[in-house]
Length: 274
Image 1 (cartoon, rainbow, N blue to C red):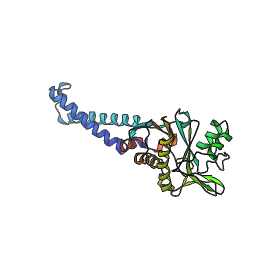
Image 2 (cartoon, rainbow, N blue to C red):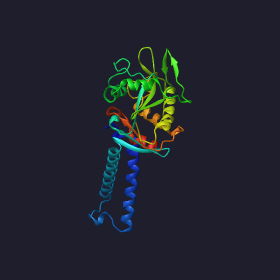
Image 3 (tube, helix red, strand yellow):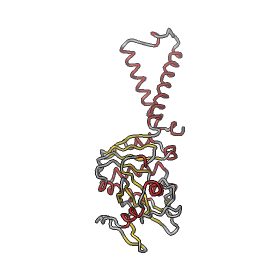
C-alpha cells in the first residue's frame, strides 16, 4: 500500500479532481442547474459539505484508478521505442532474452561460480540442451572491432556490455569476476556496461523485440550498494538507453520480479520518462 500513498499519485489526482469539479460547475452554470434543483437545501454550509464530499470522492476514485493502472505494468516511449515495464517471467517471453553472465562467460552452475537460482543458472539448467555447443560459441566469439576481447590468466575476458547471441538468447558480459567468485561492479562500470549493451543490442537484434531483466537487481555486488535500489537501477537502465546512440525499432520489455515490483513506484517512473 506504500505506493498507493505516493505523493505523485495524490498530487496528480488532486489536479484531475479540481478540473472535473470545475467542469461540472461550468456545465451546471450553463444549464442553469444548482444543488437546490436536486435538494431543497438552504444552508450554505450543507451545500459546501456536499460539494466537498463530491470532490473528495472524485479525488479518491482518481487516485485508485491511477494506482491500479500502474501497479504491475506501465508503457513508456524512449527514442521512439515502445518500452513496457511489468512483473513477469523473463523466460516466458518469445523475444530476444538478455541474460547477464560474468566477463568470462562462465557456464559452470555449481552455486560457486554460477548460482542455480540466478538467471544464467536457470538458463543453463533448463534451456540449454548442449552446454558444450554454448561454451564453444562463447569461447570463440566473432571479433567485433569496437569491442575486442582480452586474455586474462589464459582465459578470454570480454568487455562489459558485450553480447553474443545464442538461439533466442542474448548472452551479456555484465560483471567482473573477482578471486572470491563474486560478480562485482562499480557505479561507473555499471553505467558504461549498460551504454555498451544498448549499442550491442542495436547491432545484433535483427529487428526482433527484446526482453531483459532489471540488470543488477540480483546477486551482483556493487562497491556502494546503498546507491543501487531497484528504483535507481531501473532509472539507470532507462536513462542510459535514452542517452545512448542505439537505434532499436522493436518493442522492449523489462521484466521485474515480484519483490522488485513492490519496491518500485512505476507511476513516478512513467511520469519521469513520458
